[in-house]
Length: 188
Image 1 (cartoon, rainbow, N blue to C red):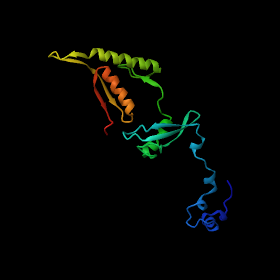
Image 2: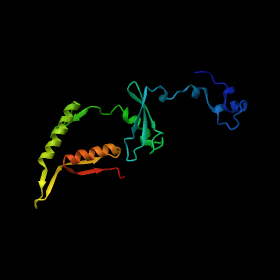
Image 3: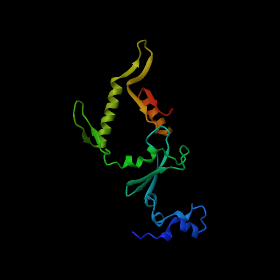
Image 4: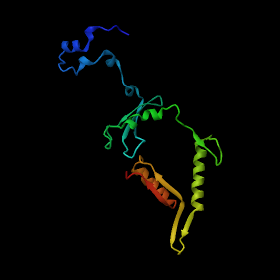
């Protein structure tokens, strides 16, 4: 580390320059000038939506070597205009947390422990259970003979951060499957 010189003291720098208010270059240290933000070295920037609440603030995710290095508010977002709450601003820690589970885990009925399974197997298990629930709880007619054509064995509770297109797709999917219990947090 370089030795400190009183000639580089911010007050003296302010007096030597035209920075009368002390809010310009005179108060910036050499260490600050040499510092580069993490966002400059990113390989790519990906737009996303904050995962926390129903507001849907836009985020810019800065990625370097396939690792998230920074998350900032997206100034192009009409919702948040580049601002993030403390939780949204700290979401990089959520992504890079060492204890974050990144495997698909399955606990069989009455089992004590979780086992790792591959993603295609998990998707097949979900699809099989979806079809089985639809089949086992299908109602063609009510007691008076009125047509129902529905299932009470499937319900959907949508997340607050999914957009209109995802909501539209979810509604179409569940309605086509005969589900009538479809809810979403979008009204919050």
